[in-house]
Each structure stands twice: as structure tokens, then as C-alpha cells.
Amino acid sequence: MSPVKKDEDTPDPAPTPTPTPQGVGDIDGNRYDTLTIGGLTWFTENLRVRNFRNGDPIPFDTSNAYWGTLETFCTVLDNDMANEDQFGLLYNYRAVTDPRGLCPDGWHPSTDGDWGALELALGMDPSEVGMNSYPTYGERGVAANVSGKLKALQLWPTLDGTVTNSSGMAVLPARSRAPQQGGFNTSASAYFWTSTSGWYRQLSDGTPGVIRRSPGQSSDTPGAGYSCRCVKD
Image 1 (spheres, rainbow, N blue to C red):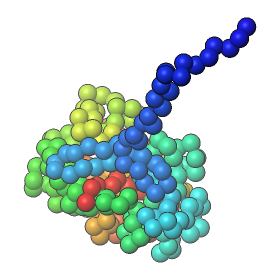
Image 2: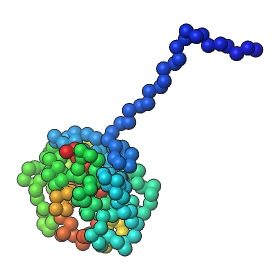
Image 3: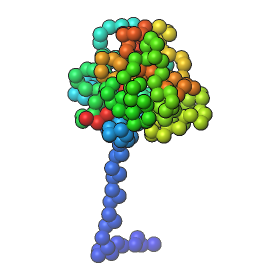
Image 4: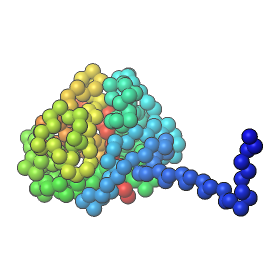
């Protein structure tokens, strides 16, 4: 049977357009969803980049041997590469504040002030925002259930009516690198660096408030590895 000849007047089919990548991309090609809350635009996922913005690699270490130094390092939770996509990477404070830039161009690692603006937007009493959780104040934003508004509706052991993710920030229990616990924190929790003198935020399972504390007040220093969220400049 003879092949059917193409009508010379029939136009070629239009090529299928390439979909526009969604979210914000980092230098490694990872992409991140974002949202705007409290006047600031945030990543809704933890950073998982392996290179600084200028292309220099961030050393990746899965041992306790080097984290006490002043070098930049990152690692993956429980040394299990399967955790990278879901939880992102854990960075030391030196990496977060390195001038080569951890976040994509036009973005920066969250500051203490960024977190304060977010907490205010979620109903935290203004008198609590600047409070130090150590040694006596404890969790902030308990009455407003700030932690519950930040937590994702998955993977937390306690998923009760207080965990709503109404903020859209979808915080997962990515835990932390804590050398005093043999390498990694074992309790369901989330830790986030700020680039402001090392103040960090901690969310714990089954609690409605948020810890604000300096690493200089903790035995985590200098070997801690925490998550990082980026905020638009």
C-alpha cells in the first residue's frame, strides 16, 4: 500500500511549548515554592543548595570531625540522601552568613527581623517577638498557636487540631545536626538559622509556641546544623 502523501498546503503542527518552570531556582537547578506573608516573600521549602551563588561548592560533610571548625559546611539529615528532597539540607552558621551568598540572587537567608515580622503576622503578641527564650521565658506565641500555624500537615507525630499550616509555610520536622547528641537531634522538631547574630527559631512537636534563642546559649555551638529559609530582598 502506498504511503499517504502530505498535502503541501497543510501547515506543520505547532511545536508543543516548553512549560515555564515554576517557583524560584537556585544555582543547582532546585526550585522552591514561595508565598507572601507579613509583607515578606518566603520560600515555603527548606534550602537544599550545594553551591554558593558564585558557584563555589559548600563542603558536604557527614561526620563530626570538621564541624567544630570555622569552615562552611552542610549535611543531610541522618546522613541519608533520601532525606534531601523532603527536608532540604542542614547548614552551619558560617555557611548561612558567608558573603558568597547561600540564597539565589535577589534573596537572602532569613533574618531575626524577618522571623519577627512573620510571627507578628501570625498573631504573636508584639511584646513577645523580641523575647529571649533562654533561660526563663520559654516559648513565645503560645496563645496565638504560632507553631501550629507554621507546621505542615504531615510527618509531625502530633497532628491534632492545633496543627493547621494556616500560614502556608509547611514546616516539616527536619530536626537538626546536634553533635552533643551524637550527630543529629532525635526529637521531632525544626530549627532555622537567622543571619542576625545567630539567633535561631525552634519548633517542637506537640507545642504551640516558638523558641527564639542564640546559639551562644546552647551546647550546639559551633557544630550545629540547622535548616535555612530564604526571603526576598
